[in-house]
Structure formats: C-alpha cells, structure tokens
Length: 315
Ligand code: TXA
Ligand code: MG
Image (tube, rainbow, N blue to C red; front, top):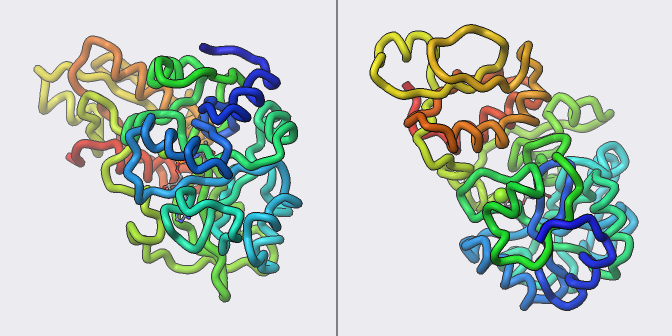
C-alpha cells in the first residue's frame, strides 16, 4: 500500500516489517538494520544473493561514529561536503553492525540520504535503516512509489511516497584509503565533484567484484533486449524490419518510436529520467530498445555504467 504517513512507516519498521522509503537517488527497501531477522527479509523479498551487502542509512554524520571504528580526516571532509547527499562511504564497521548487513565483511557502507521525508523518518528512529534499491535484484531500480508498488507491492506492507526521486540513479560508493579515495560505484556524485574538495585524490580504479560485490555485470535489466549502438539511425537503416524504441539524449528525429531523456543532452536530466524511461520502453509494443553511447563526463559516467549493466550487446 502506498501512503505518505511517516509515523506509520516508523511503527511498521519498529515491528520488524519492511517499508519502502523515498530517497533522492532511488527508492529503498528499508528495515531496522540492527534487527538481523528483518534484514534477512530484505534479501528474501529482493531475491538478493546473500554475499551482496547493504548500505546503512543514518540521519546525520553525527550518527556515523556509532557504526564505524574510525573516521579518517578524508572521510570527514567528504561527509562535510556531500551529506546529506548521494555519496556512500565505506568504513571499518563497529560491533553494533550485524554481519548480515555487510555480508560478513569487516567494512560497512554509510549514507545520509538527501530527502526530507527519509530524514524525518530516520530522525524518529533510534536505529539506522538498511536499504537496498526497492526492486527485485537485477531489474530496473524504482524512482517513484508506483514503480515500487508494481514490483514489490504484494510483498511489503507500506511504500512511503516521497514523490519522484530527484537524482534518479543510485549513490556513488567510495572507499577511503591512506592515500586517497577509490570509487567503487559511479553514481549521483561525480568524480569531478569529489575532486573539487581540497586535498582529495582519486585513486586509479582496479574495480573487482570483491570490492563491491553488488557490481555484478548483469544488472538493471530491462525485459526486452537493450542495445547500445553507435548510431540509432544507422541501426534502423540496416535493420528495417526490427520493431524498435529509441531512448534519445536530445530532441532529434528518428524513424521509430522514441522517448526523450532530455531536450538538449543535459546529463543530470538524462540520469534522472533513465530508469523511468527504460520502464516505459519496456512496456510498449516494440521488441528492442536502442540507445547510443553517452558522453562519459560528470554524472554521464554513472549513466554509462548503468547502461553497460543493462545492455544486451554493443553493436
Ligand atoms: O542510492 C543508493 O545507494 C540506494 C538508496 C536506496 O540509498 N541504495 C542502493 O543500494 O543502491 P543497493 O543495495 O541497491 O546497492 C548497494 C551497493 C551494492 O553494489 C553493494 O554491493 C555495495 O553497495 N555495498 C554495500 N555494502 C558494502 C560493503 N560493506 N562493501 C562493499 N560494497 C558494499
Ligand atoms: Mg540496487
């Protein structure tokens, strides 16, 4: 059931139930992070592999100290600059954090969401929330309460409606290392934004599945094949009999059904509309979804990452 009652959400969470919550990135499927049984239900409902750890959501940086054993200066700088906001930070966990949150790892990922309703809820609770995206694993993440209801409605008691997510893609996840910051997942805060913080160095990424177990190759999938192509027009010319829908970065003419991600190649807008538009194209009468490669700068890197994981093939 969809509703807007924060007190009701708090009550259900207190009873060990799952509640979907709005954040600025995507909707989360939340449970009391300190209640291993409630957290186990998240894995069950999402059909999430047990080796894939969960992000701990807290209401402010002041709360972080309880759940980690050390907050290096570099982490403090990032918290000051980006919290509340779409940056999640990996730090050594304290004994308060159950092993089921971190899938057995010694480190936990923390984040303060930048959504007034999520913050109001977190402030009413005396525990943090574990919250992965509120979708079945490997499907497109939800950016509205209705998306959550379509995917998980029958299995959860309440979807707290906070409107459309303003960022539309998941948070950026970073590890803090002695000589700098390593990006484990591209997301709502870009490399360029992180580099603007004085004294912060980005470490070369040798991304492995072990560093961020959730970065599985296939993820965020549409039901229909999604092809990342050099040119939509060329594809349509060469394959005139394919029934295609195109996702466009700007208002151009193509010879098939089309959906605009932005009027004028605005990357923030493209990121914001990506998941909702993938869903629309998935639901129409055509067989294939086409999209061109995106400019890999700013939040475009996160868009490119999600497309690589959603895409069926590159042509
Ligand atoms: O924007 C977001 O981060 C959203 C909203 C709801 O806050 N949450 C989200 O959660 O995207 P999820 O579970 O869909 O993705 C979390 C990612 C996974 O790839 C997971 O492997 C990684 O974070 N992660 C979580 N805890 C970790 C840990 N202790 N070590 C390494 N990676 C971790
Ligand atoms: Mg997810």
